[in-house]
Length: 518
Image (cartoon, rainbow, N blue to C red):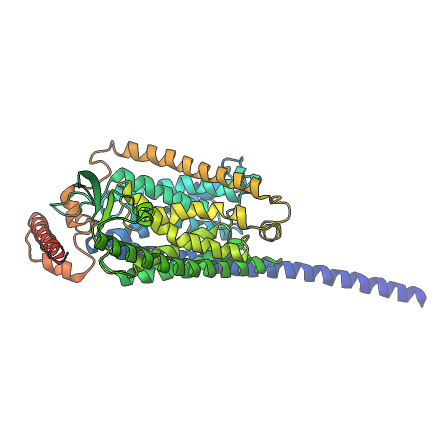
């Protein structure tokens, strides 16, 4: 009887062990399923950001270029998908060497890694889209598509490998860029800088062939900035809010799951994204009121204050000049919100609470300050992509060196990622910034220099620029009234000439009324 009991107990133990093993496997499978749902859902949120970019950029440009800017956003996604499946994901993967991934995932067939491939694809498309608004209205459509290929097929995969692949050289140094302030936004911001500087400023009218007019004032040469206003602030607001909505997936989704304690990291990313952006909005609102008040008093006094000289310099004037004291520029506030989002992206999982607040406080005013400095250099960026993604991308990479903690880094990256010391981390972050900026500048400058040699160059001709890219490439405009205004003309040449004359007269008339009011 004792032997029978022993055999029975042994059999029960074996059955219990088998049940436990099965339970472990089921738990592991359930964790993977939950992680997939999280990663896939947040990736879809990031994909929605393309709609946000489209609305923001469309509202920020003239109505005669709306179809063009929307088409560019559409093509960014399509071009990126093809390149990402073909070889981009393989370059970004944790194979190969410290500089680039290998060829293991070239033309990858469906498997479990498609989850990660889908998630990073929408990130790659985001990086490419940043450039479209900066060169809107001037760059030839097919030249832009080649630049988009360069961004999504070359630069982003390499940057992603350097920073996020376990064998990437910046990853092995302990570089902090959890969700892509550098990989996505700084790379895109540099693309915006090189593209807009190479293509040149916009034509304002027949009387003003450049946004930046050089003139003299009391014997001193100054620059008058005649930046055109976007045609629809409501669409800009919608686009900015869609971007903020999608950004929760952008940052929190970078955990690639919520199992194994990652839910805490995801929650940290979610609220840090909301907090930093909110603080940035408030700080820019106060900064905007301060600037407009100062400019108003300066016009009354006839001289510049020290603060204004720091922001604007003594040889730069905004033509639309601030006539009313204390007004708020909504577009500047929207850009500040995006600047706060970009700045918190790198350290969304590792920054302390007060560090998040400080990030937002700096990012808001910095966006406006950077925008003015870019304009003072004679670089025309219609959507301030350079300031939002480039300048705030650098800020976002530097601040984690000051406001992270070892506990938060270990929770986000694992205990063996890096031993946090402020001095060392500053050096690592600066190396990453210089590397990303330097590599992107060299590649994009080389590409655009070569493209300039093609027939027609990289910029559309002056008349087509005045008439608009929509008429040149799509045969009509996005809004019905533009189409109806031109549909009775018998040929394209007459329609272009008529619009040219009417827009010039309208601008001169409005300019005369502005001068009389001044």
